[in-house]
Length: 136
Image 1 (cartoon, rainbow, N blue to C red):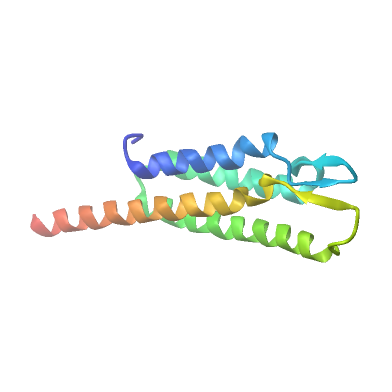
Image 2 (cartoon, rainbow, N blue to C red):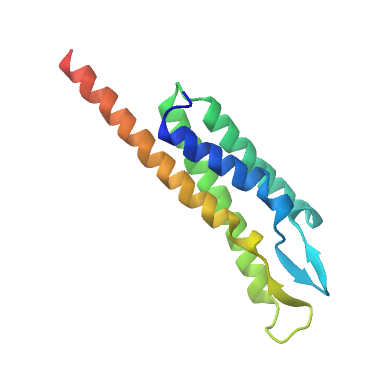
């Protein structure tokens, strides 16, 4: 059901993790922009997150399964964000290797925020269905 708000949030999460990493770089290294495709681990994690968002979007009839997939996707994005923070902190600040961080490093944080909003909407739908079932 596309008209539900969680579908909009999941669609935005799909766009953020599936399309925006091709546009925004992660950081600049030796005057070269580094995208997520330069590291296989980053590419796999971005791909898994995109797949989970799409799978969750398409399983709109199974709200509990959708909720669990979103939680797994949040954990995956936290791991990805942790890898970015580790990469940023492991290089000293005065090294000429990394001079500028890109907006692509913040895409997992934006995705986590969208997934939290989607889970709130799913929970609200689940509570509504349970309250209607009580009335029968």
